[in-house]
Image (tube, rainbow, N blue to C red):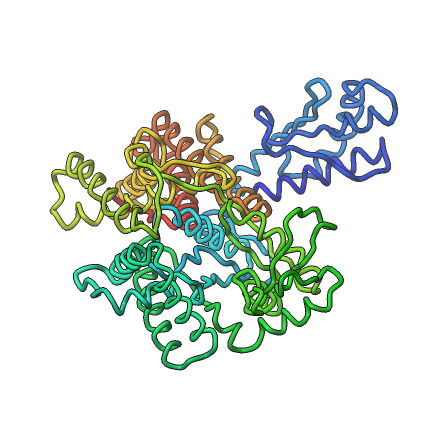
Length: 562
């Protein structure tokens, strides 16, 4: 509903300001701390006319008041110094609730159109995904959900590096170490990978064996391809299981090797050879991108003519470019340089450029991780530990529940805690995951938001149905504040979509739960007179609908009790 109010404000300003200036560019701020929307248009006019912006604001205000009645969502308009302030009307409040109660799970949906291929996670198939990968997965999954809510047709892809040396190391290690059948398959593969790396050490002869294995794969040897395919598929089974456990889904696993074997990589190399930026150094094909501000040149092929991972990534993006309107990649900060070079080269070749969401890394208080040496905290272990801690809290609070119910609640609390604690931080900021903070109800993370949903469910369960509520009865300050916060959900979706920042939705979720908490504290619902009780039950239901929709975008369960 808020976007409708936003449009009315812009239209009203445009009509009013046209009497003062020709230019229809209207600056507004939907996040003003005092007004529902403010505008600084008076500064712009004052600069042109060499007048005091406060006088200009008063002049514009007169025109706005004269035409305000034509805009039914706008209530009061005033000027505070040079700022023009707009406030929603009573009609806006009731229309917001009607819209939520009518649209329900569709509330907050936008009407953008187009196809998007969004790539996230894409961890190497040499072991389980760990805490270093999970921020990629959570940002990517949440963003995919938001973009779908905005109206886009989104396909989630996981790019599988099945031609990397690490896969050859695992294949080599499988001949020398027994797979631990007691471990989850991706964990067993990780153990072999770590053992193989330790055995390889500085042994040049053994490293040549790995290189030979990789060469046979790249040359299309059927037996070797089958070996690689089998171990990669098995590792991906474990990875998919972990992602499923985090409510993260992938539509398509796309293998790097397909672009080598189908000739796409060679086509890219042939195209790059003909570009004026191309040159050879010791037999290696290079791209001089100095013209585009890069000090480091892009290596297309090795000296022996074989392709490198970035070149195969180019082929993947060229393939994607022809199958969508937009490409979005979720990449770690260590990919800044290569992703920037990739965008430039795709542009040179005439393909779409991907939109890159770069994230800084998440860590644990315990320190750093290395898959190669087997020193890491897997997501499976992280979830297990977080679930154990959640269980202690649930067991303390809910002695009335049986063991199965306690475990069920502990599971969805732990998943929500991990997801929210990671997604709430802007991707461009590093973060440390602390399970104590993530599970703390007082820290206003996922458990706090989930609990707000259960409170609303409890009120509605006790209050029963509400027939034809008179929404105009909702006049208390906390009622109005809650309705206004509910109205801003579509705006949050719009801004998160525009900026590709799922943390905007996480922030909105917390603010919405906080506002409901204040309402819950100050406003009686079940003991209110019948007419008012009905209206307040409708408001609680509207909150429940919206917080459920918000949690869905974050991949977090909205429980009826906990």
